[in-house]
Image (cartoon, rainbow, N blue to C red; front, side):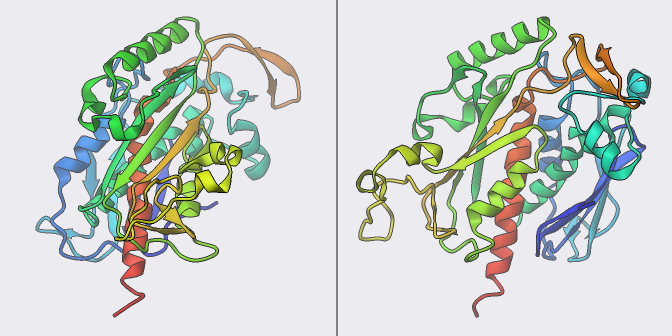
Length: 353
């Protein structure tokens, strides 16, 4: 089971949703960085459950405790161990799942692969794991402070934010519960999520991420292209079903004469359909990509499912769940983006003298 990600800036994680704690070990963080623990805790608050009426009402403090790799407030270059206690797990809500596989969850596949599974809140497959990534991603941002990373909700169901990202005010992202930088569109999204929740149903959406001030040269040829690494990191997020960057799938409808990004004399380009990445390597333009999230699989409606003995039964789900995952996934997308970019920045430092 792979529990590590990254090459130079590397994160290894542990823990289950209803275990005593989750946590991880960060390797490759340079020494001498003044660790901004307030920023780390702020990002944890953006991800945690219970923050608004449109997310899971599980109450977790999500306080991060560093166990190693930090001395007198600075990183030492040694492995950084950290821990996040689970304080509000209600495992009894999941007793009815001990012998039952929920539709579109990891229950059946984990049981089939390992012969055993922690059914309490999904165990290791739970999105609670993403709290570890936010810790590591916020540390990574302190390695690359000049790079600006802004993620936001760009759609919920059929409601889309249609303005180009260049016309958006990213300071408005945190001004509403859904994290959409357009008040009018955000209100429609919130109303949609509340409506779906009242129906006992769930809904999907997309998150767009824009990265500015990226130096030219991040990414490796052939098998470790920058967009491939970003895609890998994003596709590892729970509920993600798709990733596209630059023109994405819309580029397949275009002709080359319209799609090519023509150069300016300074090496910048007149358009940016490449999404800031050419040949798998950053070209200095804004990197932008979109991540698609499916509807949350746990519904507060009866569904037909399979039990351990191969019987089709009716399941009525219990517990506290998000009706739409995208509002809380915004800091997760930003964190993983920071981890990928920090890894490439550190890797570039080994390439030239």
